[in-house]
Amino acid sequence: MESMLTTNQAARRLGVKPATVYAYVSRGLLTSEKVNRSSMFDVAEVEALAQRTGARGAVAAVTDRIRTRISLLEDDQLHYRGRSVSLLAASKRFEDVAHWLWTEIDSEGLQFPEGQEIWMALPDSATLTDRVRVAIALASVGDPLRYDLDRAITSAKSLIADVVESLPLVGRPAGTDIADRLWARLSPEPPQPALLNATLILLADHDLAISTMAARVAASAHAHPYAVVSAGMGAMEGQKHGTATTFAHRFLMRAESDPMGTVAEHLRSGQPIPGFGHRIYQQRDPRADYLLAVLRSHGDLVADKVIATQLQSFPNMDLALAQFALMFKMPPDAGEAIFAIARIVGWIAHAMEEYKEPGLRFRAMGVYTGDRP
Image 1 (tube, rainbow, N blue to C red):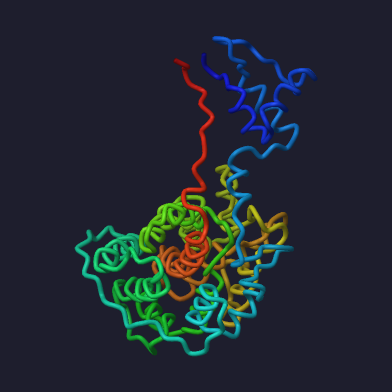
Image 2 (spheres, rainbow, N blue to C red):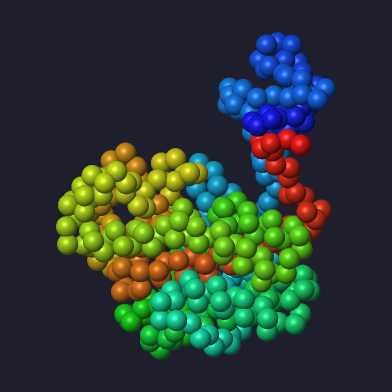
């Protein structure tokens, strides 16, 4: 029978015990139907009750078990292990913040290895994100010790360096920090490594974002760090996650010559303006506020002209990252590459937490609604 749930399935969706489901029946909140001597419940009726009671169901039961000491998102603020991300971006190096997220140990002047350029025979249509993804896979193949989970930090340092070195050079690195090396591969403009360094810090982690959940699920199976990062990359490339900054960049490019007209045309098509609002933040994205404020010291922003038209929303990090790339003549997908390289730090930090938990703890049961045997 289609669209019917067993007692156990209904209980999981409602987040209650099976006995409570029968209590709902006795109170007239649910209707049961006997099928082959088993009580069955209509999917739509169970879903309606779940909405009324605010039940969070099996998915929430899984995510509610995640305890993390890495990021705190609260009151429109972001903290890494209790420290404001804005203060870290203003005063620390990306490498030292990475070490802090991985170990809770302060460091000064930490250096990542030089990194090896990984040769990739990719078509001309390959994006920077394509190169990042392939570099991760090839770096994994080149590490015979990748299954040693105790080496996660060593693997992460080498991986980040390798990924950066694998992007094509457009300039000469001004130093040996990751921000120096990465700038030389993204922008032909005079180096601004301090600005890129701050951006990498702002993006290093963001609690249980979709890509981080994917990384933690992989880590729960004790996947090696490269596989964990690949899982995060797979989710990051979704249209509603990491690629959002590329959409925002293309929008800002069109808005450069006619901001009001571009906004009006976009609204006429029924599409939301990219780079605004957030599922977690309510009134402001602190990362965007910080980055946009710094960018304003370098000149007028196209983003500000768009922001002035959006009275009911606020700019998010996607818009700020797109403005950063646009201002310094980076490729349209440079924001995605920056995002991915920075977030490797967070994915590894979460993997290290997950390795200490019982394996496969995220194995859930689906709510089957097809034909029953």
